[in-house]
Every structure is written in structure tokens, then in C-alpha cells.
Amino acid sequence: MKRIFFLFNLAVLLIFCISVPNLKAENVKLAQTGFQFLSITSDARAAAMAGAMTSAEMRSSSLFFNPACMANMTPFVDISISHNKWIADITHNTFSLALNPQAGRYGVLGVSIQSTDYGTVLGTRVDMNAQKGFVDTGELSPSAFAFGVGYAKALSDRFSVGAQVKWVKQDLEDSVIPVTDSTTTTKSYELSPFAFDFGTLFKTGFKSLAFGMSIRNFSKEISFEQEGFQLPLVYTMGVSMDLMDFFEMTGSDQSLYLTIDATHYRSHPEQILVGLDYKIMNLLSLRGGLATNNDEDNFTFGFGVSQFGLMVDYAYTPFGVFDQVQRVTARFSL
Image 1 (tube, helix red, strand yellow):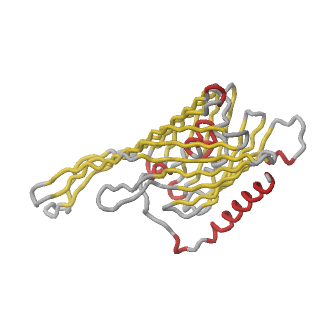
Image 2 (cartoon, rainbow, N blue to C red):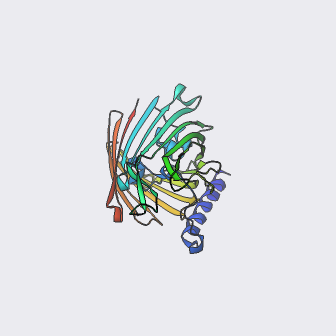
């Protein structure tokens, strides 16, 4: 029975992976969601592996990909802090914390934070009486923030579930709107909806093979003006395995994890994400990744160094016309 269940899940994943690249061009989806900062990957390990983390256990960082993957963490506490110098001088930072009381008996509780600084932009409004057709309204400093609380529980030694609720805020600051030729009014553009993440993780029992599924950024429809939109909803199914399981290497302290995700976005072409993580002596990790259907950042690279419960990860992503993106993450477990 277990073998049949394993083969069924593998068949579903293969069918989905094969069908995604064959989607027709008329299914292109653009500009259907807002709050896109929720789609940015700032965790350096994940970014180096193209974001293919749906079935990878990353302790507190799993809150950004699949909360169920947090369920099997063994340390009492895990903390991660990431800094991402994103494109167009945008800064995106994340923080996550997970607590594991009673060795997972009552589940694992986690907290996540995302913060985005868009810098400053010059505000203008139309004014046909001005020589240039517009007048300055001063500098604007838009920002975005998300705070989440998550919970994960291993229901058995093979199956885990997890969920997260997030309070999300985006502040585009004030707009100066002309009412008549001589009068104006000011309107604030700030929204703070709730979003929800759900996930599962299934360990097949066949060596280290695992399947994960997640739904992220589920929300109600919101609007700044008349046109409504939703948050960047994404459905993901992933599979991962340590390829070293196939080799008889007694006493070898190394691993080669392969992760593959198939993603379905509300406002983005479907993607296949592939990541590799080669770890030597639990000290040094070398990573690479590939993402399909991306205009600029197909290949990703990175490494990690860990010792005494502390790990530092780095990711480098060539980004076409935007040059490159670099991310750094520090983790601590106790």
C-alpha cells in the first residue's frame, strides 16, 4: 500500500512537471496581483537553489516556503536573519524564529517578518498650467511589511502539516489629487490585509525521498481604488532527495540534495525550479539552481559555512539588465 501511494505521488509530480513547459502562450498572466514583495526570496540558501524549497526542511526559514517543513526540527530554538540587496536599489530583509518545546510533542511555533524599503522617489502631479505640465509634490518613501505566526506538527514519523497567518501592510504614501484648477486634496494609499499559508510534507520511507505541497499568500480581494486585486497566490509541489543514498560510501560525511519544485502562480508563468546542495562534513555547502520561465534570473549560485550551530549562507544571482543580486543569511540553532 505504501509503495502504491509513493508511485501515485511520483506520477502526479511527473505529469505536472511535463505539462508546465507545454502551456500555451495565451495563458500568460500579467498584473493580476499586488504586494509583490511577498514573492521575493531573501533566504540565501533558498535563493542559491532557485527557491526550490517546498520539500526541504529549513527549520524557521521554512515559514517563507512551506510551514510544514518546520515540524521536524530538533533544536529548541532556531533563528535566521537575511539581507537582500534587491534590484532598483530596493532592500528586502527577513527574520524568522522557531521554538520547539518538548521536542516537538506539541508542535513547533514560529514567527516570521518581512520588511521592504523601496527608497525615495520624487512625487509629481499633473498641472497643465505649469510650464512642464506637472508640478513636484515632494519625496515619497513607500514601504512594505509582513508579520506572520506559524505552527507545524508532525502527525507521524512521515507526515507533517503546517500553517501560517500573516498581517501584511503596504504603504504607498499620500497622493496629491487636483480637484479644481486651484485646489487639491490628499489621499492616503495604505492597505493591511491578512494572508494565509498552508503546507504538507510527506516522507515516503524510500531512502530520503520526500514530497511537499504548499499554498502561499491566500487572501481576499483588496483595492487601492476601484480595480480589485489579490496577493501573489502560488501553489507549489516539490520533491527532494539526497542522491548520496544511491551510493555505498561507508563513513562518508557528505550529502548531495536535489530539490525540484513545480509552481503555479496567479500572475506569473508556471515554473520548474531545480536546486542542488552539496555538503561536505556538515561544514561547507556548495549550491546551484535553475528556474525556468524567468526573463532575467535563470541560474543561481551560492555557498554556506556552518560550525557550532551557526551558519552563514551567501547567494549570487545574475540578473540580466539589472546586473546581479546578492543575498546573505545568518542562522543560529540551539
